[in-house]
Amino acid sequence: MITVDEMMTANPKTLTAQDTLADVQAVMAKYNCHHVPIVEDGNHLVGLVSQRDVLRVTGSSLIADPGQQISDDVKIAEFMTRDVFTVGPATSLRKAAVYIRTQRYGCLPIVENNELIGLITDSDFVNIAIDLLEQIEETEPDEIE
Image (cartoon, rainbow, N blue to C red; front, side):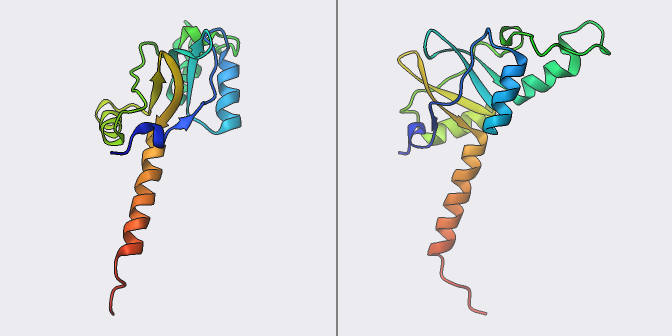
């Protein structure tokens, strides 16, 4: 059985709930990522910010006047997703993939001993599928014309 700890991104970039919208946008741009775990007290996971959350916030969901711009100084605590579903490092890759598909999550944080140790995303599963398809193609005999 292949487990998520074999395929996860270990030690993902994180922020705190007191960081700002500008901070999360900068991390997403710099590291080309779509999910930023929010931690406190070291690496204790308290939330998650996805690119969809950022788009929702910048689309005026936190302001009364839709014509007004949201401040880059708004704290992550105001728009992060709380109560994030997590899995442990020994979770099967198949189980994690099924969960991401059925729940329509873009990622799953990997937590061990109440600390974030990694992240596995829907993009990781696409890369895994590509690798498997390449392996299958390498073992298939060439077609005879």
